[in-house]
Image (cartoon, rainbow, N blue to C red; front, side):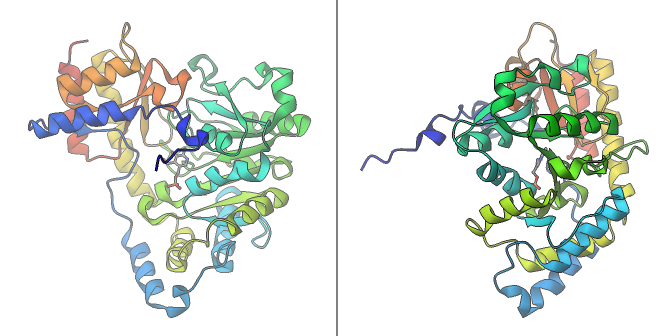
Length: 388
Ligand SMILES: Cc1ncc(COP(=O)(O)O)c(C=O)c1O
């Protein structure tokens, strides 16, 4: 039988990293020592107190059954308390929170709740690739809002054509931003609330990196702004804050009707996150400052090493005040793809080409500082020795 893929996956753009992965494996087989700075997946372990909570939760038979669709009430209460403490935002744990199996799961399912075929979904480019893909999966048309260096990597909301605005149902946005590391202040969020209210567009703010910030900076929540809950929702992840990428736990909060829509989709797709993981998540959120500064200090030290190396190599970058990435400009005369391919074959370093995050990422590359400090020092040394 000739198994045919549905057009929604057959038409997806080719996997950009396939070539890099093939080259990486070929070099590895030849014995080349590859330093992979590609993926944003912390090398540091999950703190012990969270692991202990998981063990305790796993031993409790009450947690072995199907979880509730919305997430355990105690988890939702912990989320609401964390929002109050961290952002001074009031969240109703009964109607304004849904637990997610990682924020990627929630983001990917969100357009199913708000996009009909023919609708437009707005998203920022370069950005997390799940935004446009999930809009397409729901039958919508993704429309990219470019993030340019000249605008501090914030979208120009006034530049969206009227016919796009009239069809747009939601906007995915993400600050602190992956991959550009840009940040947004409350002033920008205020503009976003006005824009959403005027055009009837649901703001879906991906706030995965609010807790990874440097030099004393504390990124705001979109929901801090007056009126934000009328027009938007916010996704959070425990992955980055607590080095818990493998645990698959996150949450979405905000507008009651929107949260209800996502909940409805999820009741038809999954059966919630393992309760022992939610239990560990409660302990993490209740003690969210425990060890956080120490973890940030490590990422900050690595950021500084990498940025100094880029300075010495004569490469320009956006100074990261948050996230564990560095977004830098590739040398003149090379495309992102050519630069990453040469860096890999000549120096054994893997970086993510900027166009992997969308067409407006062309001309850039991203490194992640989620690898050992020692390896980052070695990578910087190799980078400086490479002739472009
Ligand atoms: C911007 C952004 N949003 C969401 C996620 C998903 O995180 P998770 O599904 O682990 O919560 C990531 C992961 O890399 C990300 O970079």
